[in-house]
Image (tube, rainbow, N blue to C red):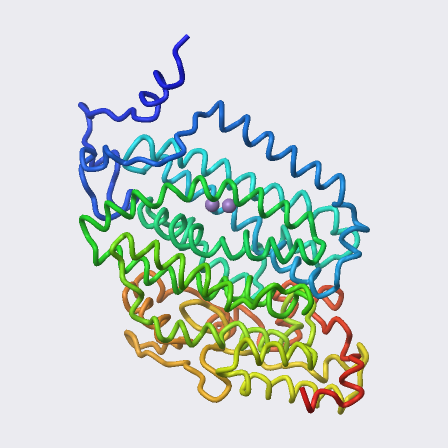
Length: 496
Ligand code: MN
Ligand code: MN
């Protein structure tokens, strides 16, 4: 029998010259990606893991067994019920956003497995596809147990099949990132930006918070997933190296575009969970501190090594580090009945902590919570008064990221309008406008929520809209305590 070293290089590097067709026909640029180069240019493509299928299957089996062991030990319903209520609601966001997005990663990787330009890349992308399928199944399995207790967990499977506004935004993102993408852009946007950059926040930063919160199941789930991500993320780096060599402007464009798109989504998923839905004494640092360490410092050092520059909107991004997820959270709290999880108001001590961590604009943010607190005080606590402390007009959405126009600060909203081929488009920020303008043919015909309402496809009446969002009085988002905060009744909100 041959030794591993004798057969593996041959099995991984198995490209050949075509005799009855052309390379352009086998790997069309539209689906393999730009720049289109002959295979000889890609033949040195290499990654460090060099896994065989046999090793892959063995390894994954062991990882699955470890997840099951943790589930059997601490994954019972009563374990989840014993966690802090705000944390459980952070879990509901992730339970919905994660599994089927991972499945779109399966499709994206399969595109690389067929249209990637080197055989070792294609082999690695096959494993990537299997990884992402695993990342779909694990959370669906673990969350399923919780559906009979709390119907908001039903959104783990249902979310991407709904017309909920956040699902429209998340689909807009993943449809472009993974489902409808050529192999080169997919691997740079997904492996380099999302997996090397942002999932570290989720899978390392948030996993450590989960540990502090006592949620060992979530911790195990995301750290197990992360071991796969760390392996298949390696596909993107040698792809980026070659794109940098042949078309550095395009490489820089992909970084600038996808960094911004990822930033908005992750500042919601991770930022809100870290700064609002994790108990104050369990936070090891602020979202911004995680961003500073993992993204601003480490990730951009990695990009620097590729010869890439910081995005042109760097100052806008640094400002948003202090504002965006705060703006989104207060907007989402105001419109909580349009979402499938519950919310908590930051207490005076939370707000004091937020002021310390985000000194630049917190005054503006604090005023928003002050007003919400005053409103609760005026109407009094209780589920019956919930609707009196609630936004009931449809907010407007950015026509690039599809998220509410919540960029900038309460005093300086950065929404802007663009006239394009006879239509007006509105964007939350300059980078979203810039991305749209680079590829208008890709984005202009998307049917966002406002377009659906204007065309009669979605209802105008707010209550009917909640049904359109697949929500019912049972499942729509509420204040966890229905405004019954002892600090609020004591009048503590006035002096945080
Ligand atoms: Mn994954
Ligand atoms: Mn992945």
